[in-house]
Length: 108
Image 1 (cartoon, rainbow, N blue to C red):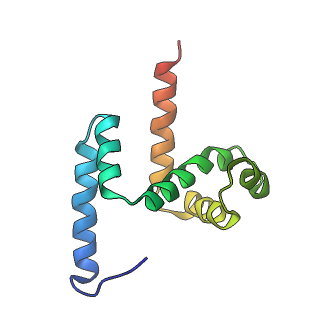
Image 2 (spheres, rainbow, N blue to C red):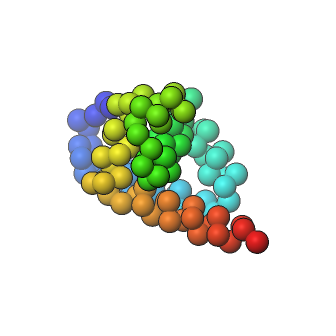
């Protein structure tokens, strides 16, 4: 990922905070989808959806090679997601919990 010198890390953190706040305020999935489609390139969206797709498989203990065979996501990306699940900022865990609570409410 390219890093700009202008604005430095402080500028990045501020911009990330602003982006995070906007995403948190978009309360409809279609609004978030439209924002992501406008914000990201197709390749960026593909990378994010690939990562999110392998999370439940990793949590189920599916081996990396089998995940690759099922999804076509590279073993390198799968390993990166696995490391982030274990030692990341906790975002995957919070999102998985939200997905689980949404699924529970949708089930009869």
